[in-house]
Length: 247
Image (tube, rainbow, N blue to C red):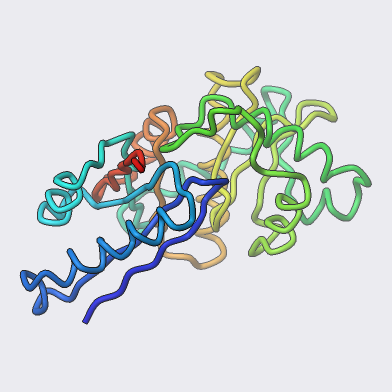
């Protein structure tokens, strides 16, 4: 009829999920589960607790807002159905990048031919995190994704040949993956249309592979503009809320 779960995102900062079946709502089940979450979070020494609620779930939003949570940002969910888009417009995206002196390669290729691809990608990923919205920023400013964790993500990437990396000479300057890690560009190369062209080329590739569309999300205003430029339709937003724990 219901469930709740609590886990640590970073030292002393926790997130929880809580859901009650519609036919069991209004019977204080959610309140009892939430009270248990608070007790467990305090027992674990949590200094902050994060909740996430869709903006089309007004009842859930009111439930969490009454309990001391305050909005930090919103993650917009977007959908592109290839049947409703002229994907042929995207076929020349990587050619247009090459005309600008930027090569689009992929994870499978660099993994096979470049001995230091992991270190180069780690440098790009670390730099590209600048300006990324974070619902609960780490006050120490420490890079929370280490090279070994990033290697695990890359090793488990679906279709590494469809995980595209943009290179200027030998420098990695951007990446996009249709299946997980997202899209990002090095701060020194932003506002040049690289993210838009990378994403467009990735869409064209996914269409050739037989996929019918994509549902994805972002809290980045710049990436939201990219999605809208490429024809994605906004579905809803996930509201991220934070509560400071008091003892």
